[in-house]
Image (cartoon, rainbow, N blue to C red; front, side, top):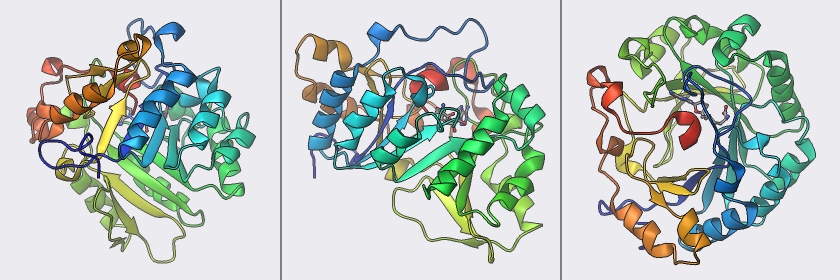
Length: 329
Ligand code: SAM
């Protein structure tokens, strides 16, 4: 086990979430700041050979699970080269995407051997999709989910649950799992820079299970140590559903995750203020391993050291963080 990737609380980090870009072809109101969002110029993003060097260093020190994310990972012009880089690592590989470019990139996606692909889809209504994402891609995303299923790729659907936005669609999402072997994962709505989060919009883990218990006799599925998703099955249903309860039942004590932003900054927690630049030192030919170690040692015990455990007390305006689109979800 790597000492480099072990923090001062004894947590061993073997899971890297890497953002490939902070650009996106959607404009989800809860993810991207409304006012003049500018994505990072290409020259300041990690290039494929730089991604390869940083990831190789991390894999040599214990990372054995990687998730590609963004922004929207599949909008990068050099995504085909990047997928080839990741296909060579001996790791369990996953991706989170909005699904829009899946059909265009299907051969490369199949060749990359993903263990699962998470598609973000917050509504099953075409009109509501347009309101949430400010783009008209609902039919494309739905068709691409079917395409992945036809090719027997493991599909998970991420749904950020927000009161007054999509909370009435819980049952509709569950019905997707009746005859499809997919996992639907409901995510508690989290505060980030400029995302207009208020605590009364959060639909909690408890509220989701209470509401679903009125319609279904669901059964908990025993999870693994590092799972962030509490999973359930419904007798007779092919798929499963889960809840990611970051705000009301966080999983920090078992956290095994680190994040790398598209501009090459290491973040030891989704909510950490602190970032460690790896890209510029790499460009100056400096050693990055000591920087990685320092970053991991600085990891707070829980919630980035800045979120309140009672989410109703969180004041989003005092949090020091990036927007979700520029961290990488
Ligand atoms: N573009 C890709 C996509 O749409 O899946 C990957 C990036 S996106 C930031 C990753 C995930 O973060 C998505 O499932 C998205 O819904 C989720 N997300 C973004 N903002 C969030 C928030 N404020 N609270 C909870 N989840 C959020």
